[in-house]
Image (tube, rainbow, N blue to C red; front, side, top):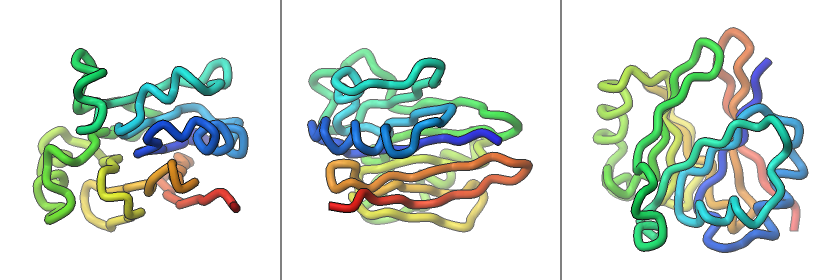
Length: 154
């Protein structure tokens, strides 16, 4: 089984991000969908974990050389990662879904809206919700993809 921890919109809340990582360890991949991506430098990332990250609209000034869209494969699955602002996800999921389909992604991981979401299309759209509120997502690959939302207790 492959376990992917997905976070987004940590916005400088290193404490919550560190607690999410600690709570879900062990995992194989850590994906940050932007807006606070530099927070990864302030938390401990377990040894052997592959990190995938993209910059969000808030990161733009600090992360000028960071990609806005990333693609990666885990087991048999292909993922697209984007913050989502560049696709207007506040108004419509159609553009990000079409981009994911054009890139042959099985799932698109994104943030920006601060609202958790799991769509049932092709590709699957998955927003973990904002990490600065203690929200995160998990993707499990055991033959098929399985998605779950998690939240820290206050």
